[in-house]
Figure 1: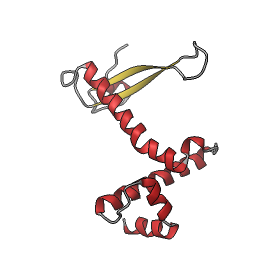
Figure 2: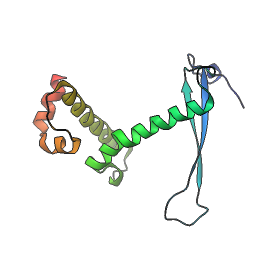
Figure 3: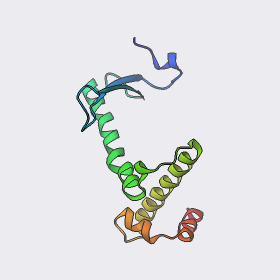
Length: 137
């Protein structure tokens, strides 16, 4: 059923896109496919980009997340293996991980670090150094 963005409270958007995904887990018996629907709101009009181009934009967005920040957070901090289950604690840990990634990116952009790998930078950065960076930013 087609709805306008205004009908669902998203004024300023031109369209809402529903993308159906099928997930087939590796190493499990066939037939355990899961289906989910992701919804996206955009200010791009239907005339600006055809459906296939919008799908590519969405895929590229998620690829950048998976290969960028998620990979770094999991590789450096073992985020996927984290057993923390209390909602507040999970949110705090995610915020601290995001802060670390952000501080590293700022330091790189400003030319204040010669370290080209996030994991190495994390090993070399002490809590007091990180606090100074936060207060300086």
